[in-house]
Amino acid sequence: MNFSIYGVNFFNKGAELMLHAVKQQIHQWDRNNTLSAHLKIGSFEKRRQAGINHLAWASWRDRKSYEGSIANFTASLVPKSIRKKYAITLESEIDVILDASGFAFSDQWGSAKAERTAEVCSQWKKQGKKIILLPQAFGPFTSESIKGAMIKIINNVDLIFARDELSYEYLHELAVPLENVKIAPDFTNLVRGVEPEYIEDLTDRPCIIPNNRMMDKTSSAVSNQYLSFLVASIKHLLEQGLEPFILIHEANDFALAKQLQSQVSPTVSLVQEENPLHLKYILGKCHLVISSRFHGLISALSQGTPCLGTGWSHKYQMLFKSYDCLEVLVNFEDSLEENLSKLDLIIHQPTRAKIIESIEHAANHQKELSQKMWVEVKQLIDCKDRQYNLKA
View 1 (cartoon, rainbow, N blue to C red):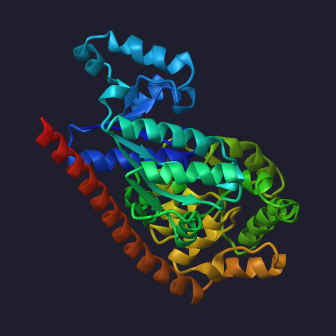
View 2 (view 1 turned 90 degrees about the vertical axis):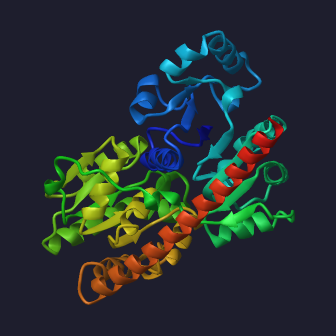
């Protein structure tokens, strides 16, 4: 069966980790299953290295331009045996569409993607493809344009998984039937990390993951405090005799990470790892993690690593609630001293041990929910497969 994936990329390591999670799952079902990404998701070499096919379409955004159709038409002239050799898939060969956007449908991002997704979902449905929005955060929706687009999406897709209760509630407020909408956690919690050669250099050290979105997606009251909070946190860790390092989880965070590094003395190391599976392994071996990147937090929490979190949307609060550790989510309305006291909770005993125990218990439950989600996806796909065989 041929799957295509949307909403992923190779510069955000959380998005790339979702790609790996999907690939691992569909190959677990059947090694002959293929996963394809369109030509604007990374380069040919990036897709080849990730072990996915090249979907002969430029982008979902280009369906009204000639770029995508020319790519698909040109590829269709190539014999199937040659296309298979070079891992090229036509759009007409795709059976199942998987959207792994993470967080893309909300007032915070505007209505453009939702409107375009609504259009292509309608087209895909007419073509008989199965369409599944994998677990992601949604909302809020206040503009009429994004409300209309989301209603159209809900009416055309086969399954939607909201990643948390609040996201589900935002969808519920659209006042349309939600029989195809369910709740499931982020599914990268099932992915096993891969050990990098240099792991001993980072084991049992605190990790700080900055996020540029904390500067451009938050109020001035928050963005003005963010960098100074990270600087104070690193200094606090150094005072405790710990050896923190800064980790890049998205390429766009590099400038902010360098700025952070420059404001701390003595200098702390900065790690930039391209392989998201290495990143996940590293975060499972850290003493603690201070992160503003959602998938940095997921990768740590799902392996029992205690975290101090900061965030710029509701998804962070819901994440810490699901891992039973809201007490270590930073609130910038609190004083710096109050937020540093939250950091102390995961540094010192007995609170550190208690928090780790709660996180590990919650992590096991979250993994069970992710496994259940994939069972539901597989049941939907098998149903389509049976219908196809009956027609044949």
